[in-house]
Length: 614
Image (tube, rainbow, N blue to C red; front, side, top):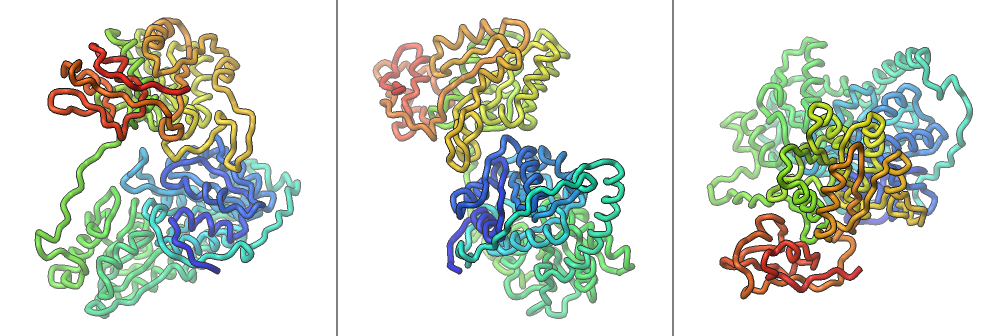
């Protein structure tokens, strides 16, 4: 054993390695990304690790390895679980042979996601057991236990950290590589009565799943991480209790300190530890449930009280005592607990600010923007200029850095739903109004993840739209992971890159043009021409991500004697390097990358000095 200061995602990865994981797969998505990256980085040499093209593929790779006896890990964020749901739902019915842990990082807030969906609820829906860690240290230990439960009961299990666990840090004791469990997979053994899902098998296994989950409810009632803390201090004999989970347990303890009522920390929300809950409820009149995001514990305790006719009032999100959505914090939890305990007793809630001066000022709002020099800004601007004056246009967006094209002054994202959806949404809009000039923007990584089927659908159904691939040669938004178009894998292997233009031509598209978006003079007329063509056609804007591929060019500068203060560069581009100095434009040299976009649009030639070295 040795001690390390680790991010939660790193701790989860090291826990999986300590558990003897053989195969790890997934798709990058904040807040889960660093888990698989750490598995690859700290790989003892015998673990197969991959970035899959999407979460569904990752789930299926892990499933195939798990039915061969391997211990497998698959990682994603909560919206990625929607993509992986199809194989997961069926996999639960056939089960696994080796331990299989599905890490789904939930994102209360949401801080970097489309939704605030709660994987604990998905666990109940899919009948898959759920583990819910409350600290970085517990995440390291619990994921090892999750593998053991999975293997023992022949089922995939969910491991559900949230952003504050994933990205929190703690100094913890971890095993040395020589202490890692060694798992030698048996390999796949043919047995069509077990591994081929048919209705007859599903009926039989559904009954077994229900029986198993009833057993797990009892087993989890004895699981040491489903913990009851007796009341302490002024609350030793209090007839009120608090039920909580995950990071909210830490929030509650921070808010109350050593002076607290009876507390029930739920580490396995499904199957719910019913007998442990009965032990907690004994002697209580009221319980406050503090959790993120759905009222999972609140509903479970309400059910238990009804089933056993207990006169305990369960309060929480459904009763308005805890906010129904959004991320909790120490302050919001403190406020909910103080209100629950009552005015006289709230003095025992630690850390309540006594004076207005003790309250920290609100942080300024800094909305995300495209980086200075980002080629996506040039791509959006070129299409915008090409379509200027066209009455009916649609700019369908997608998930990635380029979603920021929706912000002023570009205002080039009319729709954004989920990964890959922009292509078919554009198709649907054109079906209703064929006069619309529709553009569907999608990044290179997203194209491989979920865009190809959309293009095939539009081409097959003979719709008219312009597909715009924003190819910056990386998966930029989640930390610059490789994808099939980059020619390398997560394990560092150099492979044949999948060419987007050849994929599109293979589908049947005849117009597939590759352009440099930072060459506006060439791009704008070409975009006009292509947009007027019938059918599905494609523009590939190819220019590397400015963060990953730093240019060695000079920086653009404004000549104040030439600048007329028209503000066109600032007003139309929204580049963070462009600011006003008095009534003249000024370029912040610490941010400028010399992309020359502002130079190309200045009406009086007052900006010069940039230039990219190819």
